[in-house]
Length: 168
Image (cartoon, rainbow, N blue to C red; front, side, top):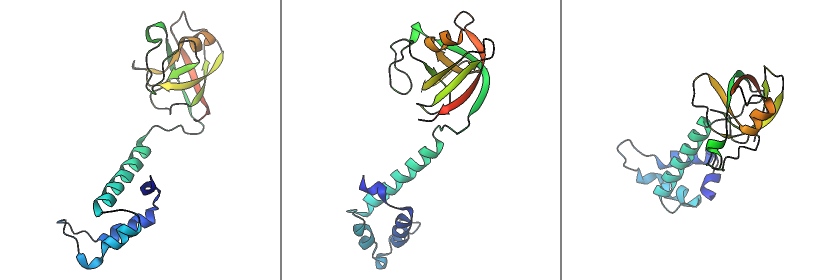
């Protein structure tokens, strides 16, 4: 874990000190091992693997789903319940149809979202714990409890407005 605490500037200096050529031959006059060992790495390969790991984690974190402040979306919502009760959700927890949860295609897990029904005027706050919906033209799948609170059980789907309450 100590390898991940390196500052970008330190990594840049170490990489520059290695002076790797395109063909993979190292300039031995650059004394790259002093820089590598001073940062706690046993070999160049330890440093290279750490740089690749850090780069990959930075890339993944930049691509991951995020909850932007002031998120607002409107569209069609549906609900799911008994068929999925007890199954694992995308974030690894078991789906409980009696909790106020929802599935959204891109919001971060744990994000709290206020869902307001345009038909009934009722609203409920749900926690995003799953991915979906996988049906076109729908923006969110609500749990049975959330659908019941909005008064949309019989209709099956409803026009809603989503507003972010809090990020995880």
